[in-house]
Length: 222
Image (cartoon, rainbow, N blue to C red; front, side, top):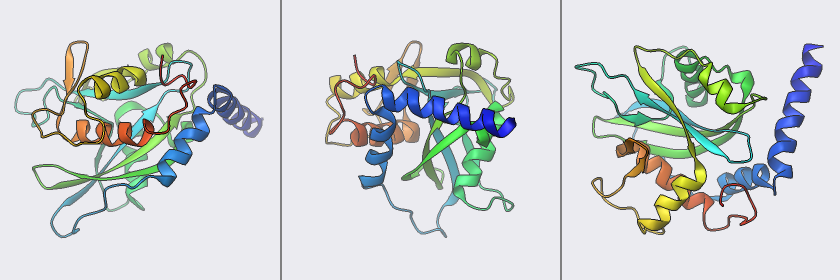
């Protein structure tokens, strides 16, 4: 019975995304065919992983977190994707991303359809972040599902679902298409927060993957 339910949820997810003008297939094809930043010298950087998680609904969104507002915390109040450092028990970088997602937000790997890696991004404190793209397979009302997440308050202050069409709009309005701005220019504001730094780099790369060949009937845009 559990197997039947799991298969039913997977079919529901794929029908929801692919029937909505091929968004599911589009993401998979876009990631597979795109060039992604390569890994640097492993001796120079500490390996970490994050996951950019799409929500399976008509107005597709990306799940981001705001780091905890704790004095002395190096990432205090910064916007980020769920993720963290690789541990010895992790089989690979993908395993790290899924483990961190479970630990930080309580979302198990069984609820994630992993699309793949979108490359490596380095921080100023010598961390190499491999970013993965996935789709949350949780069925039902997404906003309700997000509000019910019990996240790690020692690391996370808030959870955001940012509409993908908003990020695309910022990318266009700031004339980011086809160029990588410097650290100070590369920002994606949303409501009362601003996404910058390596998270903004990851989003910029994701926008560059998606936008050139996007299906204009897809729910990623208005």
